[in-house]
Image (cartoon, rainbow, N blue to C red; front, side, top):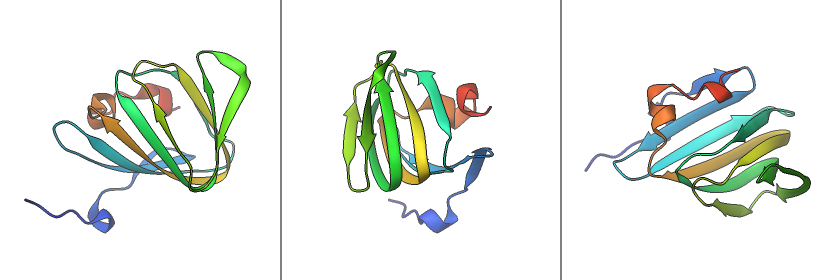
Length: 118
């Protein structure tokens, strides 16, 4: 068994408005994320089930290509997003949040998550 200290996990500057750290095992991944105000995660989906918890700021989600019915996550709130459900997100204020994925996001591990790197 290996202990991991977040202070020693590489902080990746994915794009000018997004930083992340992640740790993964064979079947699960946890990511600590920090976003600047106004950053939008574009429409996407992934096979991975996702749990998101907000610690600071407001994280506004839209689902299933419907931009008329947003869902705002405030600090202390959590959402479970089923695998393969289309969604996008807007950061309102500086956002600090954690995502958990099962299985781990292979596109994050291998750096092929181009939709975030723009």
